[in-house]
Structure formats: C-alpha cells, structure tokens
Length: 546
Image 1 (tube, rainbow, N blue to C red):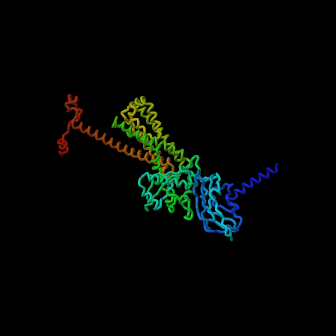
Image 2 (cartoon, helix red, strand yellow; image 1 turned 90 degrees about the vertical axis):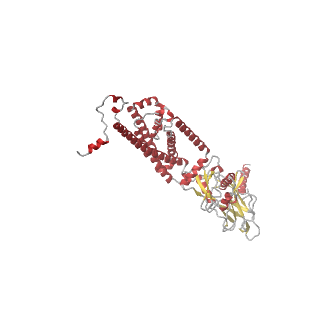
Image 3 (cartoon, one colour; image 1 turned 60 degrees about the vertical axis):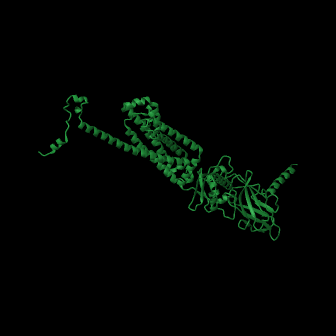
C-alpha cells in the first residue's frame, strides 16, 4: 500500500512538471523557458524553446507579450519573429527569443505569451510548428526587487508631441476637449509603463510650445502608493518610461498603438525637468492646483487683509502693516524648522551651518528682546506703567521675537487704537540695531544656505518645502532690508525736521522777543536780560569803518 502511494505521488509530481515544461495544447514544443511553474526575476530578456526535431525559419510572424492587470491584458511588446529577434541554436532544435529588458518589469506579476501559427517549420520537412494561443504560456515574475538607491520622492518628466499631435491639440475646441485629451494621454502612459494611474499627474497649466512650435507636456511621477500593483521607485518608473521611448521602430508597444500616446515624439524622448527655475515654476503651478493649499492660503490672506483694513479704519496713523510682517515672520520660522528636520539627510555639508543659523538667531533675538524690555522697565517710567498693565501680551510677543526682534514694534504699533499696542518705547534705536543684526545672522545667512542647497541638489530631489523656504528667505531679506533702509531715511528726515524746528523757534524768538509781545505776561515787566532787536541798518553801521 505504501509503495503504491509513493508511486502515485511521484507520478503526479512528474506529471505536473511535464505539463508545465511546455505550453498547453502544443506537443511539438518539448521544453520552454521560462516554464510555467517557475518565477523569473524582472529584467529577464530572453525566452527559449526546445523542439523534438531540428527546425528552421519561415516567413516571420508576430510574437506578443502581455501583462495581466485586473481583467485587462496590457501589451508589453509585439514584434516579428525575424532572425534578429528569433535565433535558432547551433543544434537546430532550439529557439532563443530576444526581448527588451523592460518587458518583464513589474515584480510579482503575471504575463502571457502569444505566438502566431507557422512561426517555424521542421527542417527538411513541410510540417509547420503550431503557434501558442493567448493564455497557454503563462510567465510569472518574482516579488524580489532591488530598489534603486534614490531619495527622490517626486520626479518631473518632460515629453514633446510630434507634429501630428501638436496639430491635433491646436484643433481642440475648448478646455473640456483639452482636459479629456490629456487625461487620456496620462492614462495611456500609465498603462504603457505600466504603473498605477494615481502615481502620474500632469498640470494642464504647464503646456508650452518650443521654437519648432511643438507642444511640451510636463508631468509628475509620485512615490509608490499603498496597495499599488507597481511599487518600483520613482526613478525606476522614470527609467522604464525612458527606455520605452527609445525602442526602435521594428518593435511595437502599447505606447505605439494607442490614440494619444502614439503622438509622443520619440526623437525628443523623455527628459527630466533639469532647469531649477523651470521646476520652481512647475511646483508653483502644482501648488496652484492644490485645493487644500489654496483654501488655507486664501483664508489666511483674507483674514490678514480684514485685520489690516480694520486697524486702518480705527487708526489711520498706526503701523497697520506690522500684522503682515508678523504673520510672514512666523511662517518663515515654521519653514526654517520644517526644512531642517525634513531634509536633514539631504543637506550633507550644509547641515551644520543650517543648524547654527537656525538656533543662534533664535537665541540672539530672544536675548535682545528680553534685554530691551528690561532696559525700558528700568529707565522709562511710562513704559514700566504700560508693561505692568499688559504683562501677558508683552510676554507673548517676546516669544514671537525669536524669529525677529523687530516684532517688538507690535507693542508700539498703535494698531486699532488699542492701549495694548501703545507701548511708549524710549530707546527705539536698540530695536533698530537688533533688526540689523537679525538681517545679517538670520535672513541673509538662511538665503545663502537655500541658494547653495538649490545649486547643489539635483532638481529631481528639490522638494516643495525647499522651494517654500527659498521663497520666504528671499522675501524676508527683501522686507527687512527695505524696512532697514526706510528706517534710516525716516531717522534722517526726523533729525532734519527737528533741526528745522529748532532753527525756526530761535529765529522767531530773535525777531519777536517775549518782552515785546503785549499778549505775553512777561511784557508787563522789562526783562533786561532779554536781547534787544538789532536792525539791518545797525549791523551795517557796526561793520562800516570808523
């Protein structure tokens, strides 16, 4: 009984191996590779068949390979079984089929091989070799995948439409047709690579014509998604698409047979958005399409405008724009911190300077703010009285001043005629000098770091937070330099005005001494110490020679 079970089991195993060693419904093929009971690594670029007798070539017929995705078969490549692609072995009983290395490019996937009838015939005989029907040769790939060492989260790619595609686009009637066209284009690109549709995105706002009047299209490749069928890295997906566009015309892919992707210019191919300024423009356009970002931005802007206009209505002479400066300073602080923590692995040599010029300015601004408030409390009785009444507000402003000591001017901005914003500072020059110091050690230093980072990093790694930090750093330098220059001008103007006032008062006293003014109480009594009025003639007489 035991021997019978062993024999039956062995028979079943051999039977399964025998059945999977060649495709279904074709006993002319003795053996195939890859066999249907083995998985192959992605990138495999050959298939092999062994026959029972010697074979030779016939008129070339089509060989097609498909990826099974859900209920759809996506064409990977179709080509003629010519001498270039189908090589008969030296012993004449085997055939090697040469493939593209991107044919089997998705890990843990299922592929079908289809070969038309009469692709070979027995040598010195008239009998033809029967082809392989779709579904009779099934090939699987392993789940193993050596991810490319790449820290990029997003890559922006550029393709160009050929003359026919550009003309087709120009003939579209309205925005609806425009959207439908490029939605179809991006869907067919995703099926050609293939990759999950959610990982590809284009902005219809970034379409432009080159010098040859051909249309450029820029799209974004996102990181792998949870539950996606293709979890290859962003760079590997980009490389697969790049290779797909470099295939010679003798081999057709899904890309060539679809009504939208057939218009892609293969001579131009696929390129990265390598120009930093171009990528910055693209990122800004994508931010423009981000509904959450737009909602938060518009809400914040409207709120700031309402506060500013409300403050102006209540007190036109107040420094109402300080609200915008305070909001932007806080935004700049948040960006600097997020940039440092999120991109610390990409900063390399800039990591230490970034830490220094983030922490040191915070500490310097905090110390300066505390010193200025303490100095005013000690030497300015009016400020001390105000400070005692508004201790909580002043303490909160000090915390905000870690980003910019100039925010102390919130306290004397006279915003909305509120007493809490009417601090009587006596030594404003201390705040002014602190602002100058902050521009040097924080704003300019951060801008230099951002520029060096943008130059050093490849654009495929240039993230949105780096872009925002670069923009805010530039704006902060611009605002503070303008404020600093404006402060110098106002200071000189104030001194000139005070000097003019003093000169005017002195001149008036010289012309109209108070003892000669009948309305002045000192006019009732002679003031001998008061200088008498000297006329022009008396001066001339004194100057004339004796």
